[in-house]
Length: 251
Image (cartoon, rainbow, N blue to C red; front, side, top):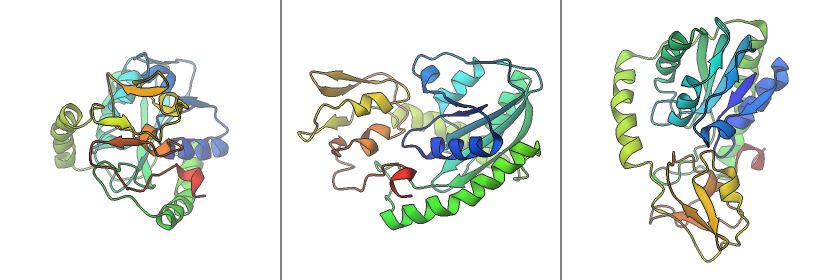
């Protein structure tokens, strides 16, 4: 089974490509991360987890759901990351998860896809995004073939220092930056509710046909990037910035 956590669609894109090669079924983890529950994966001999990199680590809501999940002992576990620049120390987090849950760790690898974190980073142009998506497909396909053949990923283990820094920076970033209180909808909002539908944590509610943010937010940026009217902003950080509507929009 291929399980994915996604915001703007990069990880879903990779998961779909991998599943096409391996013949595995797909599972969107949002149904579980929204309610904070684990998954029953006890019948699966092989698992592929596809997710973005957040501050050098896997998304905390996904990790939390996996820690609560039921697995078959010694099931093979592959991890595939999508990221804008670096994969960070994701492998270290997953090795620990496999040790705790009795899984056979088969490696962590990933691919560069378009940056979507417009709140604090430069957004890529349409042409840059198109080239990244095009170039990613061979990398994803190679990973899919390795999974299909039951071979391990051969990526080098991340450095201990990278992991140590991630364990410090991610909690700080999560506590002080990953908040929803600066999101708001402008007068361009048409009340379609897409932002609420695409939020993997369910922290957006439509009130009088306008989105309201509350509770846990992991800055997946699905709401602000996928709004069809580009009517969502984040404080004073995003006005006039390019939105990324997902890999299929530039394919």
